[in-house]
Amino acid sequence: MKSVMRRIDRFCYSHPGFGIPKLMIIIVAGNALVWLLSMMDTTGLFPAILYFSPEQIFKGRIWCLVTFIVVPNTGGIWLLISLYFYYFIGSTLEGLWGSAKFTIYYLSGMLFNIIYGFIIWGVTGQNVYLNASYINLSMFFTFATIYPETRVMLFFVIPVKIKWLALLNAAYFVIAIVTNPFPYNLLPIIAIFNYLLFCGDWLFDFIRPSRINRNIQQTQRTVNFKSRARRAAREQSKKEYHRKCEVCGRTDMNSPNTEFRYCSRCSGYHCYCEEHINDHIHMRE
Image 1 (cartoon, rainbow, N blue to C red):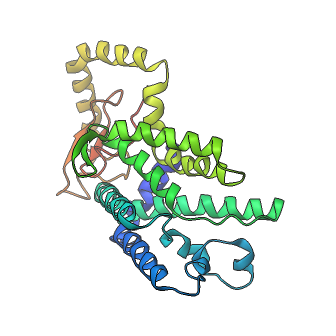
Image 2: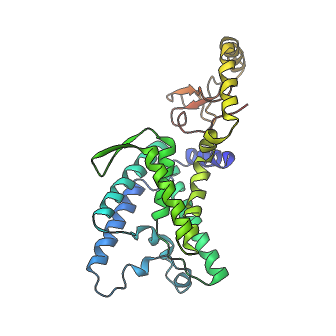
Image 3: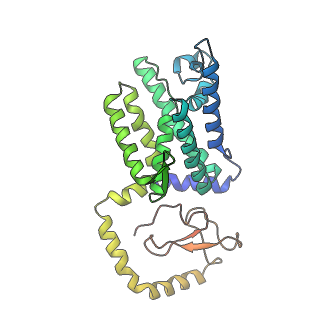
């Protein structure tokens, strides 16, 4: 996972024009529009033509590979609340990662679902009618991992930390896995794959038993800060640049206006640019 994320970060840095700006606004607006059109439809055929269905895709409905993410699974006031919440989460992640990385994140979530749908159809002949509900819920896990202490107003009234809502979300996933019929009971697990791809290392930092020992070792190493800093300065003096981002490779020579910082949570001395100081996998010695 760590090597995959580094490749993604480097790709995003090398291709700043990649991605769909304001992607979450497009998805939220699409869900609202589809719901309004479904309310006005008297034939009962809409939005069925937008659902992901391998059988229909092979019959020519290629658009179903994309349009299933704008089919809402609820309506009314609950739809408005969920769309506002997902817009808040998605736009925050896009602001943190940039349009390129957030687009890759959402596309990979779609791809996991599409692959699963085709596998089930190929093995059992059963169509899996997908929507973006579990993709969005896994995006919520990602937001809660990065900003666990953020407070949101539940029902616009009750202040709740996002990490507690994430636990409720996890309980919902477990209930869906246990109670939903096959193959829909596996969709939450498929959605978790995307979360683990982007946030797996952050999550495992909190659940691995060796974390406490690593923290103790890191604390003990801080007593040698001055000597380590002098050694790092000697090593840097032999290079053309003084600081280099561990993620994207940007240096203070080819990007003089960029601010660089050292991460206190990484073992040793590892430098990152302002875009990746809060968005990288922590180094372990």
